[in-house]
Image 1 (cartoon, rainbow, N blue to C red):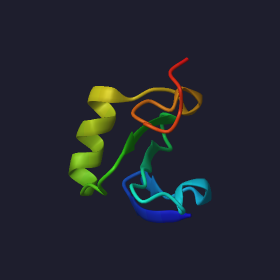
Image 2: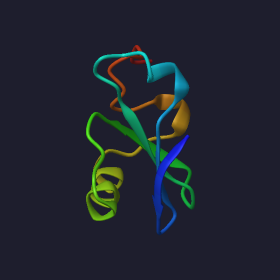
Image 3: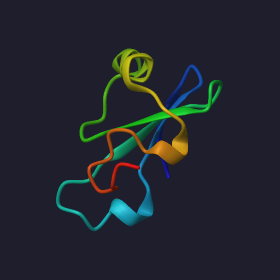
Length: 70
């Protein structure tokens, strides 16, 4: 489910985290195919900064506390 979208950046809420008391959201840069996970939904400007500083390929799930580091 897309929570927000601006300037090729999306904020996604995946169904598998809906049941958690402390959900996480995926920031996704559709142009560069990069993601970063956050606990609080940022503004589009903050999302761009976070992706620039911490981005990784979607399969890396960088920042996701519910997934094991690979």
